[in-house]
Image (cartoon, rainbow, N blue to C red; front, side, top):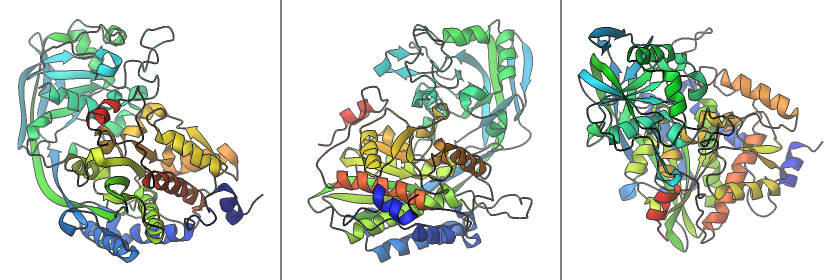
Length: 545
């Protein structure tokens, strides 16, 4: 068996004469700082944010990078709004004059992202819109021109082919069990708002959502959003109906939800009004505004400085919470995503010390990922570097800490050309690429690269919770054990650095990003989205070449 250093050299993670190797020791030192109790879990709008931002700026300055924000600033302001549904509200459906009450957290779960004092909806019609997909590239439209203004849109979660049986016309049309963006709850709420709905409710089922009802209700009515010039571009109320409660409501309206699920898998599906059903809600809301910050750093390109290769990781974690069994309250986010931040710092170090690339490199350290990708969304809404001039985005969000691996996990297989680049770089390391193990969870749509992808920028995400690595020591079985143990600490107080971490595998993966991105930065090539990707059309409309 090769030793760690010899293996890294042999596999290309330590390329001879090409770049300084990624240092597991330096990665660990950065994580130990950011995940220490002094940083208080790095929640936006807290003293932990101030410490984090100051630390990042100091590190980037020391590496010789330039400020990447506007007007010579390291900072991009991110104004946020926090909302909280209060106690004492009421919700109900009226069916043929009979009230059917909804109980927050039991039969229904709702929140709002609008800065209002009260959600007031009176007798709004309810319309079932199937999966609520409008996908021109697939020739699919669930809405058929039906007017949703002032109505409550009721959706199914996931894609029209998620439950399709072999032989059904829709089978495989949206990737089968691999969730596309059309399957995500975020898309459904946005589509409802675009069509004028006052509220959007999704029927919960655990297989389609990828998580149980306990996860749905966990935020307790709290929500966050970026501050918007026009808050009405979001629905007033959004949330989920518990599966049995939805079945009962449809039955009362003379509809069979199981049958409608089947009909929704056909391209000729049209929305179905729940006749005689009206939805009402009167809910108190408190809201507050806060100012958070993205940190941006830049290494200017030598010959094509207006073209940008971007790297991203989120600096925030979950802050301080309830005490665990050991009395710890800080949720330090050591892997999620202090380790990704450490990876970006090491990438910045290597590129700053090497020959200046042709294209500019931008390093984005995002706030409020844990609140809904809000820092990266704020950047994408108001980009410092135009999307049409951004060649690609590389995002690190959770890396494995169990040692060297024979493979690297690919999230979102079939999206763009960067996947082939990753495969070539992995081959040079003597490794292979393994597609994510649970594509139905839609991880491709749940990290900070995604707001850039929506604007047409080809992206590559490394996220270790997408499957079990094939570890050099112990194989896939050991990888499964690592994944299970980490997921038990996901977003918890135990996501902290320990001496048991072995970051040689994380260093391998960061080296892959370095090699793929470095090749792009020293070329004139522009990666493309695949013909079946949801994001190809927007890239073609905003092509900056």
